[in-house]
Image 1 (tube, rainbow, N blue to C red):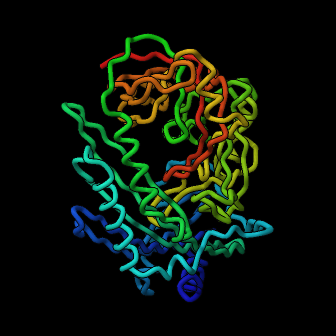
Image 2 (spheres, rainbow, N blue to C red; image 1 turned 60 degrees about the vertical axis):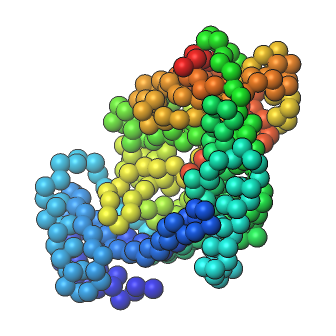
Length: 444
């Protein structure tokens, strides 16, 4: 696909630039939102574009277009060459014909693409209706959404690289609001899959309702230090929030607290953190990154020891290591570093065992204020939370909103154990439930 456009760009750029890379991406997405059994919003988007990255006199320049005629393709080459003359980036950049991985992951489902719009709407209406009728304490279902998307990416460069790939996915999310007397609590749940048969409207609706109902009637918790369990969803949220500290680009720019800590113990020996672009159950799984570099599994922390960062070819060259296949850019953007399927390796104890480790502990099931309350440079966080008090392994009380505070590195050092209830969330970050020895809690 798009061979004609790529060849035209290469031919035109041959006398203009020393080297050129072409990145094309095409994305189609659909979403429907149901409220009171009516379609509140219905969106279909179809976008594609071509971005070029050129090297001219050892300087890099970028330009892009969403129009595929020959005149515009000439313009973006000329713009990229002109932009390179203004570049102040001294990083040495080289293009190469990177090898393919031995076997491509299966990330595209024809059956999913064949699901008709009526079936998607019907599913979403069922979710909303079941959630609304599940319990008399449900006073609103603010959103019930189904969405899907498919993407195609093609990358080639003047050094012989030529790769393309496609993938698709679907997701559903429902949020409910429960009330009892003057107490109101929210709950939500999600499904993400490439198999439409995984989308069970009853399971999705009831789970979100149970989350909201379970939090009703909460009491205040006394401020102090408590053993804390982040359930699997919330630990995945914490990982997603602080994933940027593992970027070699952030480290090299002095924006990561992991700078200078390579090959040092920075976490409990229970902690192994991995980025795996080839994970069979991941939703950022791919064959290659935005430079065409082959995907791989990268261990970042191995039993508490920091052994690596995430790299593209530019950051890798600076550190005299190999890229980890984590280059990221779309056709509009410049090159950066980004995680793929980023996760904390699960343990081998059941969640019940985890909850029995302390006579008294707090389980966190909801976090808010991640952007304002978490500092990814210092690692400090102070977040609004909801959860439950456990005593002797049994859930005793739901809690009114409280604040949990700490530092991500200290928290990783204080990991006491990890359960086996692993999940990936919608941001492709994954974790099981995690027991932390102690974190500061304060009532609001």
